[in-house]
Amino acid sequence: MPPTPAASKTHGVERAVSKKQMMAEVEKNTLAQLDQLNVLVIDDNLLVHSVLKESLFSLGIREVRCVQNAYYGLRLCDEMHFHIVICAFNVKSDKDGFHLLEELKFKGHVKRTTVLIFLSTDTDESLVNSIIELQPDDFWTKPLAIKKVRTRFIATLKIKQVLFNINSAIDKKAYAKAIYYADRHLLNEKLAPYHANINRIKGESYLALREFEEAESFYRQLLQQHKYSWVYLGYAKALLKQGRIEEIRDLLATLTDKPETRFGAHDMMAQYYIEQEQYQQAYEEIKKAMALAPRNIERNKKSWDLARLTHDFKGQYFATRNIAEQAKNSIHDSPELLLNVIRSGIDLACATPDESANTVLQQTERYIAKFEYDCKDNNNFKEQLLVVKARLHNVRNEREKATKLVENHMSLKPSPAVEDNLDRVKVLHELGMREDAIKLLEAINNQIAGDSLNSQVVRRYIAQECLQREEIHFTAKELNAMALEHYQKNRLLPAFDAIAQALRLSPSSVNLLIRQLRIVIKITQSEQQQDEHLSAAKQVILALQKQNLSGKNLATFEELMHTWQQLASEQED
Image (cartoon, rainbow, N blue to C red; front, side, top):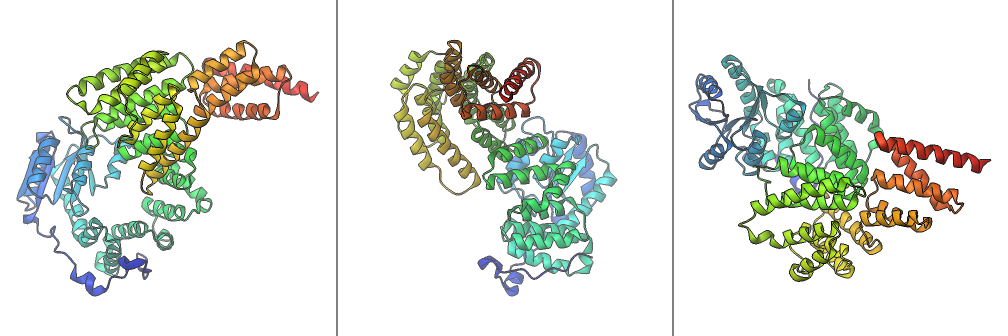
């Protein structure tokens, strides 16, 4: 037996809805009559069309439309309403099923009241996780058999019929109404086979209403009788939203260890750490979630923002590349995505103190050529292209060419696009035009509105950029070159200061960390060390120990560690 529905607390006007009002708004169940249902099948395999048509016609469904690609599927949805959508993941001719369903949901063609079924021959974990995010009602693996299709379809349709009014309320974001309907259904013993589905929607509605104490109590009660993955995840989320992570450390460890819950747990914990402004931990969690479900563009963007906050330039580069790749042929596709890859490539080259920067620059030049070709008839990106080319000249130490481009072609007036303005700040800073760079950064800060998590992360990044642009006047690559020159001329204290500034800009660079340790060892050998040098050495050693070093880097670190330990031993004696 499911737990007896508790009386819901009243939080604001939405929860204070009378029973009379609720009953007056009960909608006609449009899924009730089989012969009135419209079905859309999107699959490039004609045999699949045949099996599904035969299966559905035998059940009394009259209207089954079949298309072989996403383009015609979208056109049909613009022309008529479909109660049921059956879509293959591998719609090879244009966009894949994931991006198609994402677009259908965005345009309102697929709602919670729509029966949504996903087809695939692939059961790879990353695909399954991505599909789960779209919340289909069922997931069928091909090849399909007529008898199995009929059985699964009837079972899926029955659940949607029972939950129609609850799902309709969710579509309208009327979560209090959804809880009301759920409570009524949970009192009906005839609906016992559907109580798990009903409880799941009820728990999600409590969370959506931000009634976290109510949600905690609800999920705790469910846990006494059910061991579903969604119950554990819902309970953990309710406590995380109250900031009570210490109470569920063991539970979270278990959830991240199990295949069926680890994606949801990592994603949930990333959100928790963002809300707590613990960005490094959030970044580690989001990377794990990304590996398990790489197609979600918003999560990729979040990963990019967190990589910027934590100065992971390689992570920024990979995130923007992944966004551009995953967004192809989707509603997210845009020329700006490739432009962001180019920008992050230049940022990575500026932060990379060794010759590997050349490989990134060569790839970036290829991206620029592609961008120019793709946008040859679009003048909207003319200035953005000039800015990235000026930055590229700067990285290649062609400052005169960069200055000419900026002075003759770049406006200092803020653009409506934050990313365009950030790129202009960087080129101004690189050319020593720091006052103009700071003014533009202040203008960007005023552009960021709202209290969304994304806005908070970007605002924090802008504040960080403002501070660093005021205090540090060179790129990490330039500071590394300065440190090397000072070191070679035995100017050890200026070398330490330069490398310390470089590490503020690129704290995870193995080459910079190793160079700082080498400089501190030399300072200690020359008996010039101060407390700040010893503290820096400890931090560098700890950072390098956390890195997965191999080959030459590992050998160099082990050699430096041996020397450092000898120095420490001599000082103790």
